[in-house]
Every structure is written in structure tokens, then in C-alpha cells.
Amino acid sequence: MIKKITPVLAAAVLLAPAGAHARTTPAAMAALGDSISAGFNACGWYVSCTSRSWSAGDFPSVNSHYLRLLAMSGAIKGHNLNFAAPGATSADLAGQARKAADAGAGYVTVLIGAQDACRGSEKEMTPVGTFRRNIDKAFDVLRPTGARIFVASIPDVKRLWRVGKDNGWARLFWAVGRICPSMLANPRSTAKKDEARRDRVRERVMDYNTQLRQACEKYGPACRHDGGAVFSHPFTLKHVSAWDYFHPNAEGQKVLAKITFDAGFFSDAVEP
View 1 (cartoon, one colour):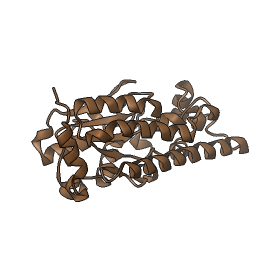
View 2 (cartoon, helix red, strand yellow; view 1 turned 120 degrees about the vertical axis):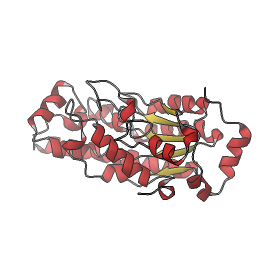
View 3 (cartoon, helix red, strand yellow; view 1 turned 60 degrees about the vertical axis):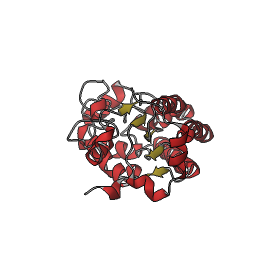
């Protein structure tokens, strides 16, 4: 069992110089978020595949944050916790953060927000103000522990529509599974109302990403944001599961692991 961080250790981490964070590897880490971090559909039919998670997975070819940290220090071995859950929204993040805090995770990754935007309709999307309050609440849970937080931007779901709309299998799975209807409904429609809807959903994702970045800045030097690396990455259909054409497959998780780790605390401490 992983022990909780002591108040003395928490204070030491909070008071350490920013550069020290990059040189000190954690003894335990936790992945927070939704189905992406849970590795959903990355190895099986509609199941979570936490071993393939870009964050806390242990599948060699993905080369997750956990495996990269393990290569730097054996102290973290076996202490790769994953509290991400399929279907989770920002409202669930504080509960996951409490689990990470209770477990003494010194490093926490956050990728949340896709499900706040991917609703049955636009009107069901989480308001931006509510989203920000949910993020702040979760970060407030972690702050007393001194945990370092890495925040990944939400992927550009409009890009997924763009690369998949002409693929018959993608359209079939999107329709049958009712996957992200706010963005992916009527994928081949060029009607102005559908084009405007997609633009508004993308704008909401961009607004969420702005709030994630600002919440990270508010948390202080113990938080790193990816600077939009995930949102701007040119993902293609080869990076998503052929079982739903939405969630990252193992190759997609591998890409996520690299671009996020390169933007984080420890990128200058390991060889490329």
C-alpha cells in the first residue's frame, strides 16, 4: 500500500525551486480523466485497457509516462495508479483527485473535457464557467499534497470529424454508438446549421482548454500544461480504434505519451 504524503514532505515539494521538480522523479503517480486515459478500446472490444494508457500504462510499445519515469528511477515501480473512468466529465475530477491524494501520488496527469463537449446535443455541453469551477475544485484537493500536475489539452474533436467523415465504417460506428453526437451527428452534411454546430462545439473545446491552462497557471510552478500539444496534433484514423473510430488505439496512446511527456516536467531529464 502506498503511504500518504506527509505534511513535511508536501511542504518541501511546494517550496522546492521549479527546476527541482524536473529533476526529482515521483515515487507514485496517478492518471485522472476519462476514457482516453483509461485506455478504452485500446486493446479490446469496449473495455478499458489501462495497460495501454498514455499516462499510467505498462505496455512497452506505448512507452507511457509511467514507463519513462520507471526508466529514470525504480522507486516508482508498481505505483502506477489509474483513476480515470470512461464517461467521466469535469464534475468527476475532484473525486478522482481525492483518490490520488489519499494514495500519496506525487505526480498526477489530467486529461478531461472531451465528455463535457461530447454530449447528445449542444445544449447539454458543460458551461465553461462550470467546467472551470470543477477543475479548480479538483486542483484544490491536490494542492495541500504538493503533487505535481501535468495537464493535457483536450483533443480537437472537429479534426476527428474531418478525417473520418468520408470513411463509411467511421460513420457507421459514430451513428450506431451515438458517439459524440454534438460534433459527429450528420457527418457528411454540408448544411450551414451543421457546419455552424461543429464550429461551436470546437469553440467550446477551445474554451475548456483555455480554462485548463489558466487553472494550471493558478496552481503554480508545480503544474505544467502541454501548451496545446494534444489539441493541435495532426491525428489520423490510424491513431484511433477500429472498434469505434473515436478513442485512441495503442498507436494513438503511444503518440499521446510522447507529445505530452515532451511537454512536461521530465523531458529534459531523459534521452530522446
